[in-house]
Image 1 (cartoon, protein in one colour):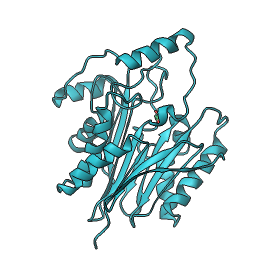
Image 2 (cartoon, rainbow, N blue to C red):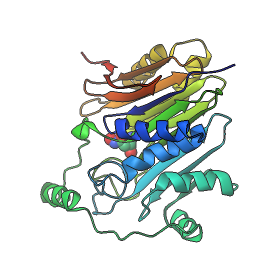
Image 3 (tube, helix red, strand yellow):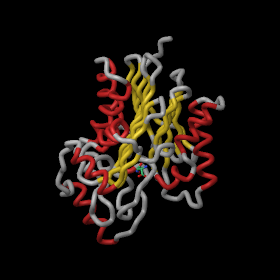
Image 4 (cartoon, rainbow, N blue to C red):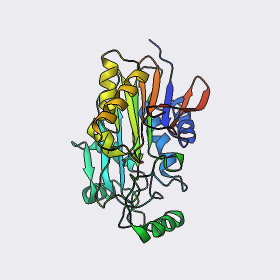
Length: 292
Ligand code: SD4
């Protein structure tokens, strides 16, 4: 059976990332190569304040990164609370392919990266991140930002013509988080889940809300029970809304794709969008939302 290849990713920065993934797929790269290569574009983007080393730091002024990667056969790898590595997604892939483990964090993850020949970058904040941090430090008030600049964590999920699926998710996390805080993005089942018998899902937004409902796993399981990707994303947002004490200042967006190539997205509030590449069509689509 042939499948129609399709790549989806979160936010506007998903467009150049999808284009790269699409190019890799069409040069006979695997769907895993495609999602890894795709999100590396965002990780390297000097303008991204929420992905990669140019992202906003934690409240101690340190950038710490989270990422995960997963194949449709259940293989997966992740890194959390990682410093000084430009491409956490590639380290997550190494962990998946070369170690008996799934998730490495902090100093251990950095040591493993050094062993694998990754370059250690210095920890100077980008001029833009430094300016925003210096402003924030004046008041030091922790408050998650909604739809920060309309581009946030990148989560990418895809299907190739052989029916293989994979996903990747990478972030610098919530700006000005506590040092050591880990979000949903490196947690398999929260920020990302892929089961190529069913489909794939990824998440963006306030990790604490997503973690509480194992958001991406929940969506894949709802699809397994017969919901469409759109219905599954909506149900997951409803579940999350019911479980969160306060939704003030909270945004969450989910994105899902099934094996048949149907897709869907839903967020808590207006402002979430996603990029889609399929059959030569590239678009940025606004997601429907829970709060009208
Ligand atoms: C997190 N979900 O760390 C990620 C990051 C994100 O707004 O999407 N930031 O909670």
